[in-house]
Length: 225
Image (cartoon, rainbow, N blue to C red):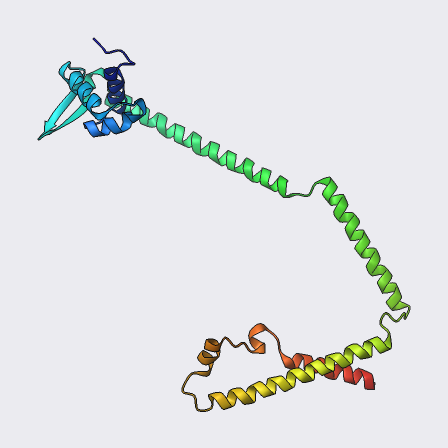
């Protein structure tokens, strides 16, 4: 007689049949902790089910291995297995097609979400029109000969620029003289020594004194012409 489904034996029997694989008492006890079943109770239930012939078991030394009775399952014949394999292959193909369709829809959604809304387009258009208007007004002033920067202000800026470039050149020369004196008899590689000290040349950060010097000379030529 089959045990009640909510009894300890019933719970253990259902678990063994559902697993349908070799199990020892520890496997079953670990899995059935969610039913608050102790290992001793699971062991007792397994032995009772085995004694009643409701599950199979084999002994390996001191350990028992339990297994669901196979005669209760409908085992497919080779022809049925082939049919099941065919159906599985068809389902896999259908699943792959569904995944592809889902990916395409998701990609289309992402594309639509990345497009600007009508409100955003109108806002951007208004901003661009404002910028164009400002540039057109500035262009008109330049074309009409309006002086945007006063000569005295321009001179102050150019003199300041000239002074800064000269200071830069002097400091660069001073550093070279000190550096040459330090490294003249040093056995260390200059590049490695520079990295060790954490020094950076102008060129290391993309700044070249020569380009500013040329700009300075260009300003001088425009003054003289």
